[in-house]
Amino acid sequence: MTAPKRRGARLASVCLWLVLAEQSGLSNAQSTAYGPGDPGIKDAAYFDVMRPLSQEMSAHVPDGFTMTAVGDLIISRPLSQYAVRFPDFSAALKLLTTADVTYGNLETVIFDSRTFKGSAYPWDGDWTVSSTPAVAADLKKMGFKMVSRANNHALDFGLEGMRETSQHLDAAGIAHAGSGDTYGTARAPQYVETTSGRIALVSVASTFRPNSDAHPPAGVAPGRPGISVLHLTSVLTLPAEAFAAAQKIRCAGDPQRCGDVSDAAALFGTKVRKGERYSREYAMDPEDLADIYKSIRSAQENADFVIVTIHSHECSLDCESDAGPYGPGDFMKQFAHDAIDSGADAFVVTGNHNLGPIEVYHSKARGAKPIFYGLGSFFWSDIQEVLPHDLLQENRAMLADAWTHPSRVTDYDLTAPLNTAWFAHPFTFQSVVARCRFVGNQLSQIELHPVELGYGQTLTESGIPHLVSDDAVAASIFNQIVTQTAQFELPNLNISYRKGVATIVP
Image: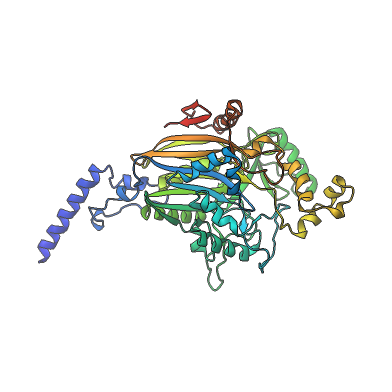
């Protein structure tokens, strides 16, 4: 081909690309609409006219595709056998096994304590959470195809525990994302092949133990295994009167700076500022965001449907109250919206052990997608038989107050009073199974099936989810979501109720 012919062919290709781009709703200006990680098309001539970006950035699942999502999986031993005895548990599992893909957050470490060579690393006085090897196959049997791993318990038993967990999940055939021996592996999306398409999962955590976050190499310094995280910088906002009191405390501890009466300061290592109301605000690390959005974009380009999850205990309002459920940090709205614009088809928050808000987000670039700002827990196992000596040491005073002979306590004798202090609430043991149906690659409806986890049941049965048949209890569970949605200043949900099931439509 001569040079003039090549130039003519190239010009024709560009013209055809522009025509197809206009027909598909994608223009050069619009190409930057796919989230903050969108590289933007500079020269359309470099792209195949038969593969427009709008095609690659869209979900591709058959009409009626169903995604089921639940919250934290705190499960220490196989539990599916109880479905024979408990019809309501069996009914809950049917919601998992009949979906095209089912997701949950694996908040435990799976290993064989008889042969394990690692050690326990409790953090901040919290339990170390562990499971027997048979749990992986049991989760698969119950319908779980994908689990997230980026959370504050992923390294409860060190890197050895993280790695053994991966081995058991791989053997069971459960896709898992959010942890890895390299920074790239921890950040990367993971996939499961289904008859309805290729499904991707991206998992990150904003709440995590120190030094559990994976890092890339830096110069001659090697990288670090761990989990994929979003670092946050926290600022405590105080009303004028409280801020003035904080300034007095700061002045007493640092007399040389008493003259500083600015509207922002640091108190006991916490940044504080003056504002209209008490709240906690969070700034997201821009380097983390860039890598996360790139991972989400890559997932959408290489899959037919993308689930993005974050494990977060952060809260902005009423965070110090233990009397009722509390919502996520305000930063989560922007993060969730940007994640969907970047390629997520569903966004799920886990971490706070209560139900949170729900939003149907109408992305200008990608249409109607569901956001769950808190799904509570699906399993809550209080049988934890691999508790380290650290927890006994840290709680000696409490044990002395609770027991006449504290030297005789068992693992559960330690767990029982700790649970009373932190988790003795019905709402901690209430949740939902969320089933999302998609038509035309857009969310068509969300079904919420209420579950209770047996609060007050015997130890062997507590923490097992049962579908709620009592309409009054179901209504109270749904009301938690509606209330949280309003408090989080989200649009009202188009929600209806029938026979104990709530339905939300865009």
